[in-house]
Amino acid sequence: MLYAAEAVVMSFALMMLLMPVCIKKLRALKFGQTMYELGPQSHLNKKGTPNMGGVVTGPVTVMITVLVVCLMRKKGAAVPFWSLQNTLWALLFVAIGSMAVGFTDDYIKDVKKNHEGLKPKQKIAGQLIVGLLFSVWAYFTLGSEVILPFTHSTWNLGVFYIPLLTLTVLFMTNSANLQDGIDGILSSVTAVGMIAFGAMGLLMASAGSSLLNAGECSAAVAFALTGACLGFLKFNRHPAKIFMGDTGSMFIGGVMVGIAVLLRLEFLLLLICFTCVMSSVSVIMQRTYYKLTHGKRIFKMTPIHHHFEMSGMNENQIVMMYAAVTLVLSVIAVLSVLAWF
Image (cartoon, rainbow, N blue to C red; front, side, top):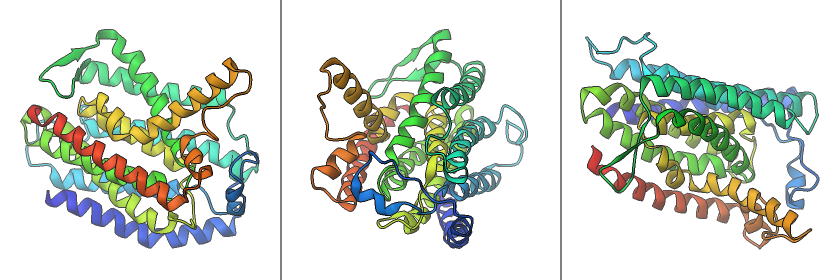
């Protein structure tokens, strides 16, 4: 528990130190956000706000995670720190790999000033490569069983685990990206959700030696990201001085999936990451309904947080609502698996 608090404090402190420098540098380089013309009109005044805040959030989270895992490990640990069996490296791979795809997209949009960024096929290809490599590692290292919440059972997906997890990486990284459309929304819900994942990681680490490494690594990255998001929120709350960008949002999506896989709690992504999931679901529903009805819409605008915005809620109200929903569902998620620990 002490290391968890240290991870939050250290990553928060680093963000507070580095973000002002980052904002100043990004402004000088004119790495500003390009706004989508069909987006909410109230967002047009955000054009030029520095983007790519994830270039600080991601590295800070990784640095503090590695440091905390080193501090948490005891002498004579069953898994050597530099071994590929150390689940830390696979977790960081899916997070950093996803961040690399997002950074490339941001670079094209904000540096090259091409709003389209990576072509959809290029982005999906990058995400699928990261997801596939991570899924193959998970299958041969951790197995194909997933815990069923609210039960004492597991579900062995067999070889189907690999394609399903690959698609989950694709879905969650894009969902986190879609969620990042209002000042402070992604960093807020992520901070709340990571506390839940961190708590379950600590519970797993205390449950037995066979679960120790996965639990330690999950807890370390979850609490490090919590502190980083809280620090980022200081500069990203409305009116935002900097945006997360695809760099940060896809890093967060990778972390979400990575922790869930290490803890064998993939189904809990539906609860803890509910608002991210609904961002993607709302877009899918809108596009499908639009095509089927030849132009009619379910929502005023998607992702769904823009629907709430265009219905009269301000950005701070939407962020508070999303954080509250995430908090309630995160508590339910932890309670759903307490018997396993």
